[in-house]
Image 1 (cartoon, rainbow, N blue to C red):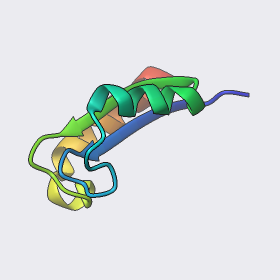
Image 2 (cartoon, helix red, strand yellow):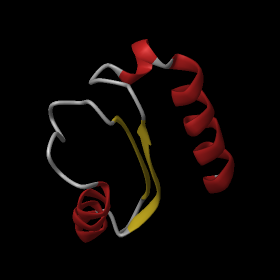
Image 3 (cartoon, rainbow, N blue to C red):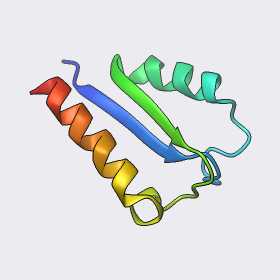
Image 4 (cartoon, rainbow, N blue to C red):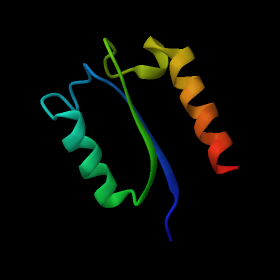
Length: 68
């Protein structure tokens, strides 16, 4: 069974450091077959929800509206 998914990360997150955005999304699509979006926040590190709460909330609200 597939589930809708959304990926949100900071571009400066050390967890994804050095991985080009296109390659990251391609890798995600390999396991998340219903990936609805991938957002990389410029100038943001690992703690996206603390560093950019408004943008993270907007992404989640938009995603929830798409899957409801």
